[in-house]
Image: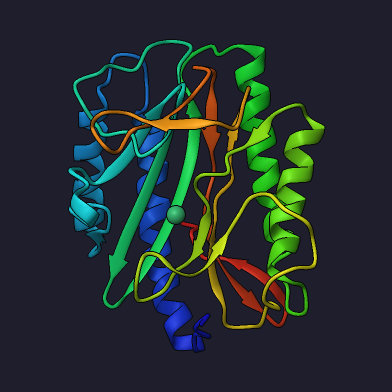
Length: 248
Ligand code: MG
């Protein structure tokens, strides 16, 4: 069942989303060559707590950190560590926050110094695919209209969409129904209604869509070792169209 949220509940998710966005903004500024991902994790924790939120990923199913920090061929769920960012890297940073009873979740991929043309195109296409997906989140459309628009844009640009991980509903739990694949035929699945709150999150690979999980049980990497990017917003379906809730 997909829960429909009241305006007051959506306001609380938006407050969580504001903290997510402020934290991502701070992390984007801090993400420079030489900083470790553990330092980014500490910055995120401080910012989230200072703003009255709680880091949602810490201890979620045993995840050991506040953010996911996924460098280059890491698709998602990278664990912050003593690894330093280097010029030419791309890093996907995923932040989840609980505020009062509600959650919000968003991700960005950030270039470090000068990156390759391919990396730049990958970031642009992934962010555009997210925008396209969000545009489909209107009452009357079906769920996979979002999925299809993402896949279409990604593949038109020669990249591939990860199958093994998907977007999700979000509200009083970080992951709720429905699952939102970033691929598939249009016009399938539940009809979208005002009050649905969705985390839409294309994960896009430069090469094959195949991924594997490393021995730590978390870190997901591309099977061919090529780059991957990830952008995510939490949005509400409203009668006036999609509203992005993870904005500062
Ligand atoms: Mg998510």
